[in-house]
Every structure is written in C-alpha cells, then in structure tokens.
View 1 (spheres, rainbow, N blue to C red):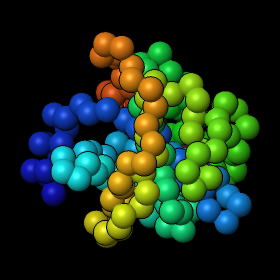
View 2 (cartoon, rainbow, N blue to C red; view 1 turned 90 degrees about the horizontal axis):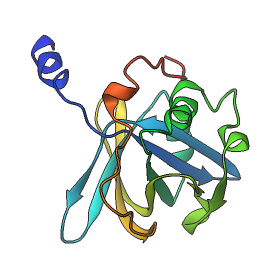
View 3 (cartoon, rainbow, N blue to C red; view 1 turned 180 degrees about the vertical axis):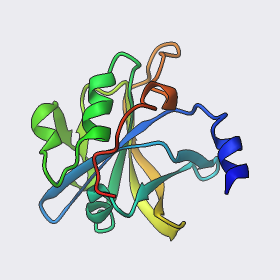
View 4 (cartoon, rainbow, N blue to C red; view 1 turned 90 degrees about the vertical axis):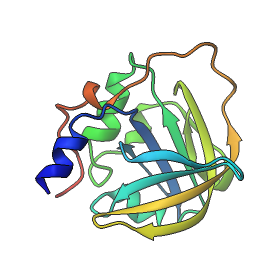
Length: 161
C-alpha cells in the first residue's frame, strides 16, 4: 500500500540483532521490527521474517536474545543483516556466550536482554515473538548512539527472498 510506505519511509528506528538457539543450532539476524509492548508486566516483541533462517530456529526456541548495537558496530550489523546463516556461521566471527535457553548473547553488543518466548503471532510475512525478559546486560552509561535504520538502509538482506 503506497500510503503506508509514505508513512514508514519517515521512520528511523533502532535496529536489533536477534539470536536464537534450538536443537543444537544457533541463528541470528538484523531486525527492524521490534518494540517494548507492555510496561506491567514488562514485555518486548520482535518480528522475524518467515524467509529467514533465524525464524526457522526461533520457532523452536524457548528464549531469544535481543541486542542493541553502537553506531560504530556497523560491521556487526552487516554480518547479521547481510549474510545468511544458511551459508555463513555468523557466530564464528563474533564473541558470544550461551545464556538462558542456550541462546547466544553477543558479548560486544552495546546492550542486550534475553527473553523467554511467551507467545507467537502471525503478521503477514513476519511472525511476532512476545518476550518476557529474564536477563539483561549491565546498565549502559548515558545514551550511546545506536545503529538505526538509516545506517543500514543500503544493506541487501542476506536471507533468501
């Protein structure tokens, strides 16, 4: 719908790296559709493309990790957004550690949290994962500049169409 594109094109929101683990597999991707969606209880929703390998792993995951990247971490954003896990082991190129549910947490991320998957809902070509936070990174001083949509607008998605 052209009207929604005109609205959406005005937005410049944070980008997130979402990681998942299930059945001995790890996956992660760059996500633009995400937001806190409840204050009491605290909840966050991330939307994963059904074309993405991360979605295929996440649908069997009990937990997901959501990471914010500092604006200087463009290469990390490009790795998780421009490469597909079907061809590249993204985790071989970054420092990470397993947390709740064996989900990989990127140790170099600006900030992160791990959430238990509370529910899933369809939304067209993306599925929403409702998360209950169970663990968070230490507080970050100040308000660091984050990777935003405009920082990766030229990125060609790595997952198959």
